[in-house]
Image 1: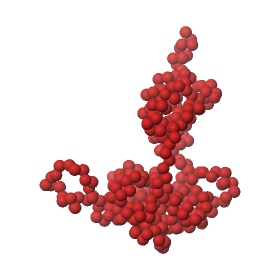
Image 2 (image 1 turned 60 degrees about the horizontal axis):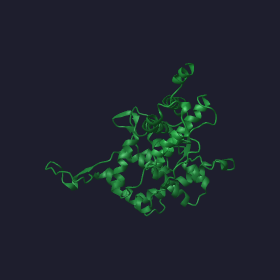
Image 3 (image 1 turned 135 degrees about the horizontal axis):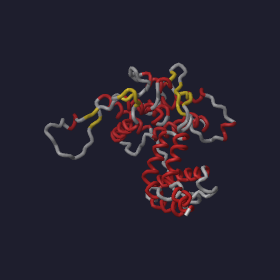
Image 4 (image 1 turned 45 degrees about the vertical axis):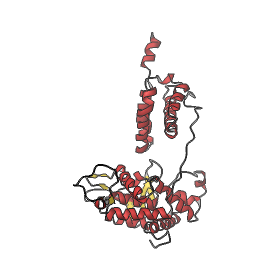
Length: 335
């Protein structure tokens, strides 16, 4: 009878996932990882495994869930990785025996890793679309809906794109930073005199001083400061909050359609900066430092970080991207 009572009182997978979120993810991971993990657990793990006792979950239970998600291999692999960490914590917390992780030996699905970056011609079209967006406005999408005599003529159906998302996109192009890093940039993170921004040293890490080129600083210098707001890109409706990533993504959807680059994601702008940096003929360590990657960790023992070559490469890359946006064929231009 006592064994049955103990079993009923033992934690379920729902309990484990909640504790994993509270005691691990919220402490050690970024907000983006937190939201992603919560979404995966809520959508897949809790419905499939939540009622099971932590100590009773088998490899077959996890494998069945993984197989059910084979149509979305990247998502399935990401869930498996998160579950594996949660069950590793279950061992740490004494909820399962050591070396009993039910996610072990489950083979991940192969994923198609895409490395998309913009060509000079594509940057020219993007630059033209951005100029059009802030001067004339972008045309309404053709939806084939019913016509109305009250609608403007087709050639006049345009909507301006606000300065905030356009500014964020330009900074992404000229720095290779991640979207959330720029949306959450505060004026205290910008040092015009030193030519630096404080950006996270790694995903979810503390912000550290990072040299950037003068082209990016020129864009920031033209951003209108909102009184009483510390954000570089403040939310117009509530300056106490920064611009949302959704607003920038929505602007990007319109820009990329207008520029004829529908398959390009905002994160591909980071790939573009990395590609242009490698084309500048610098070594992999400088490219790593420009993008603030944590890869090539072993080589960090033998390579000293020098911000001058990073700034020089940032200037060259940003100047070339700006020239392409301006339709100069990617030729060198003065910052």
